[in-house]
Length: 186
Image 1 (tube, rainbow, N blue to C red):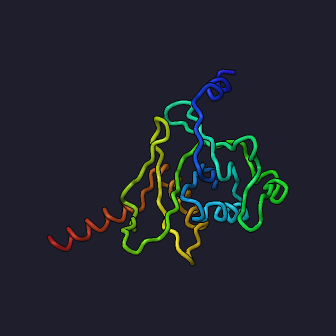
Image 2 (cartoon, helix red, strand yellow):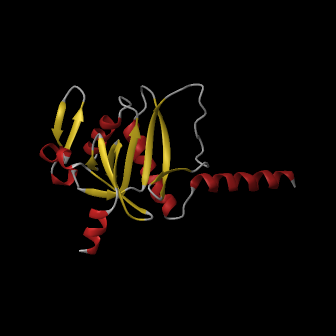
Image 3 (spheres, rainbow, N blue to C red):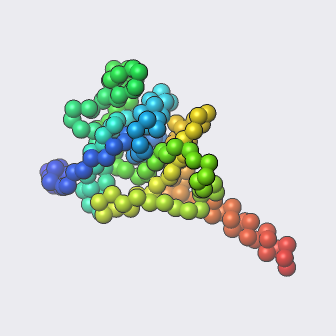
C-alpha cells in the first residue's frame, strides 16, 4: 500500500514525447513536433520493443533517482501516426507491445540536423536532463533524411546499459589513444 500511496500522492507532470521500453531500458524520446518520435517508436515496436506512452508522457518521481513514465489514461495502448491515425498497439502487435509504466533511465532528444552545429561524435561528453530532483542521462540525435533513427535510439539504449555496467567505450578509446601518444613521444 505504501508504494501505491507514494506514487498516487507524488507530483505528476506531463512531457511531450514518447516513452519506450527498449531491451529493459526505459527511454523517453523527446523533440519538437514532426521530428519523427512516433514513427521511430513504431519501428521500435516492430522490432519487438514495448510502448509505454505516445505523444504525452505523464512522469512521476516516487523518490530521488526514481522517475517513472506512464501514459495518460485516455491514451493507454494508443499511438497517433500521421497519415494512419490512431492505432491500438496491443491489437496490432500483441500484449507484449504495451506496458503501463517504466522507470526513465535515458532521455533521447531528436533535433533537426543543422550543418553549422557541432555534434558529439565520440561520446565523451555526458549530457543529463533534470526531471524533478533527478538527473537523467541524455543523448541528442540529429535527424536528417536517410538516417535510421529507430536503430540509433536502440543502440543508444544498449550503450547506456553498457555504461551502467561500467563499460565506457569512448573513455577506453581516449585512454588507449593517450597511452599510444605517450609511448611514441618517450
